[in-house]
Amino acid sequence: MKTEELTGLYEKFVMNTYKRFPLALVRGAGARVWDIDGREYLDMTAGIAVCSLGHAHPGVVSAIRKQAETLMHVSNLYYTEPQACFARMLVENSFADKVFFCNSGAEANEAAIKLARKYGHERLGGKHELITMKDSFHGRTMATITATGQEKFQVGFTPLVPGFKYVPFDDLPALKAAISEKTCGVLLEPIQAEGGVRIPAEDYLRGVREICDQHGVLMILDEVQVGMGRTGTLFAYEDSGIHPDIMTLAKAMGNGFPVGAMLATDGVAAAFQPGNHASTFGGTPLAMAACVAVFEAIQAEGLLENCRRVGAYFLERMRRLREGRPLITDVRGKGLILGMELKIDGAEIVKKCMEKGLLIITSGAGNVLRFVPPLIITEKDADQAMNILEEVFRTS
Ligand code: PLP
Image (tube, helix red, strand yellow):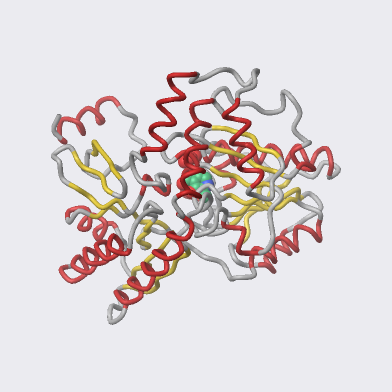
């Protein structure tokens, strides 16, 4: 099939919810993907922070194949070993005591919102209001577009879910002032990824924790994009010296197998009882087998260390690229989530990079180039990306 034929089929048969690049991908291996004409691309998007082990990771492929041949799906009304094993892995390596499994980031946040509300109703005397951040992103369901503090995702979908309030990100006084007698929790990302790779002040998460503790409300961290190693630690909250009461994960957890999770401490998780929440596919043996393989590979392949080392190198190369280029107004990043802020919209730069064999995306108001590559990339890959970008800037 040719690209034009494929785009024609999409136009005819697929609902028009994505503004797609004119690129048809057929194969991936490591940090590279190939299009329908056999052209190679360095993939600095990893399916938007999903394929952290790279494409077609042999360990994950073999775990999925083996599990598919054994038991792909049974209802959550029964016990399965892969779910128990993966839940134990998450709990033993995080603040959490219990895990709920689902299939995406939005679902994980939806579960977190429901748990916080249930906890508020039962343990906080009926408190139900959630405070979230302006410029955040939490998903596309009704509750998660409401939680998302960006009007562009909400327009046309009113009435929104009641009981949400927004404050500026990285602004502790504003958060303090917003907490009311109705507040049951504060939901935020440790780094605003879709919002433009915005990294808060070093003591911000600790400050949020203190405010939540002072008022007896829940701290909920959305680690859907930055969890599972992207910032150089397994979970982004680890560097802050505090932990949340609830955390959500998805994206990189299955390296491309759709999966999500909502984790909580025992005291909070106890608000959910049988019948309160559920998912047909959540924690299915196939998904859990993929997750176990991903988790084992992160440890066995030293990916956190690689992420920190190559991430620091990448950021340094971005800093050098910025020198003498007023078009670039800022470069920032942590581990392998990196942003380059421009004076202009980044769409044309992204397009030109693609023509030269480099896949990147934008975030924020469209003026931030975002790099969320597989965590396996090398310094040489970072050089290749920066060299292409440099050429694009030179000829733009
Ligand atoms: N939360 C964050 C921080 C995200 O970045 C995203 C997706 O980009 C989501 C939630 C929604 O995840 P999903 O697209 O899997 O529903």
